Image (tube, rainbow, N blue to C red):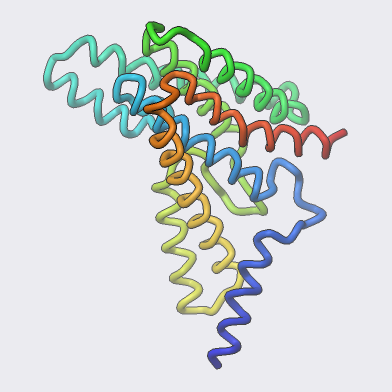
Length: 234
């Protein structure tokens, strides 16, 4: 019985990384890993180095907004509103482009992200924080709205709360039903959480040395994702 369980778990883990021919490139799991690594990095960057704002996590910003309103700290209110409104705009813009150029949009978006991050990385240290907040919120929103599903599993490239819920639900079904598909879904979610934390950790380690230029490292996983999508479609 123990040997059967071990084979069950290892076969499910191996299936995560086994290529599936019918899976579109933009729905491959490791593409989402690249995006999540970058997302964790950018979230930590905006918090550690750019005024304590989570530029790509608007639930946290809405909470901060309520606290700043209660304290009547109007400067902080405006600073917190910037990423919230820009995130909203990014979702609207991405829907427009997805409806017009759906096939080319993912790779064009990633190219835009890499170029914008590169530009931000070399701005002077004196650059106002809202420029960074709005830029990160914009690209994060468009990415979140464009990359939604990997191998049929709904995944987020920004938020871990949904992955905590999805992981717990999946592992419950594994425990009760010994369902291989549920185990794979659970491992997908746990992998995304680990990747997000890793991205934030790397940013925290690098930021004291590189300051604003730290952001350039968040473009590296995006380049890997862009390269694979571009080559696949070529």
